[in-house]
Length: 222
Image 1: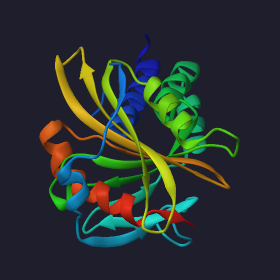
Image 2: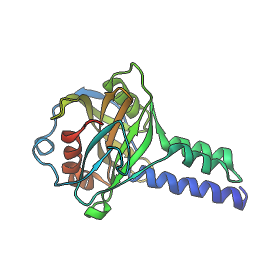
Image 3: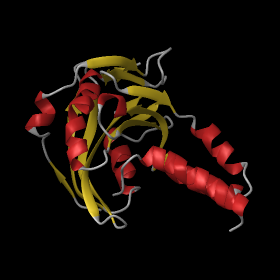
Image 4: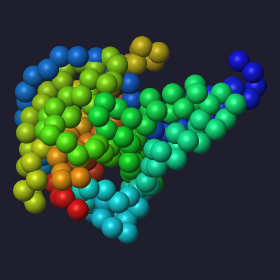
């Protein structure tokens, strides 16, 4: 690969690292209730994400944890930038692989680093359609590699918004490590929305669960 092509591919890999932010994924399925820690602890509220004028304008809004910082992701612009380099086709393909997962596209990420954690709460959005929240969530998880132990259940927010949630484990063949992840999906008139919490490892994931629970409990249609 020529130097220019390498630079383009490297830029896309860096984008991928920023978006993956600690994830790789295996496959079974069951049903479960949220853990006690997940249902009883929430973080202190910070900024509202998703509303008009916020860092990310989304079909839903929710409270981000205090000190967590949100930024919008323009998937179209990122893919276009990746494709403009010397190795454009490959770079665009790599960018698309990290900007899209199953039926949804990356739209926003809320960074935990300012709060002292390594990880992100990411928001993915899809096009309006007839797919229900659980079907969207299953497709989202199925698009990952090496996922195992999926446990799905339904939930309803304080605002009366119903959705589906999944807890699962991802395994990195490269690092030979496994870690917990969690995601939820809701349907809105503007299309499905997926919130995903990963983390550098299981300890970071569990430390960030109160922020995820805050987002889930305050989730409502914008």
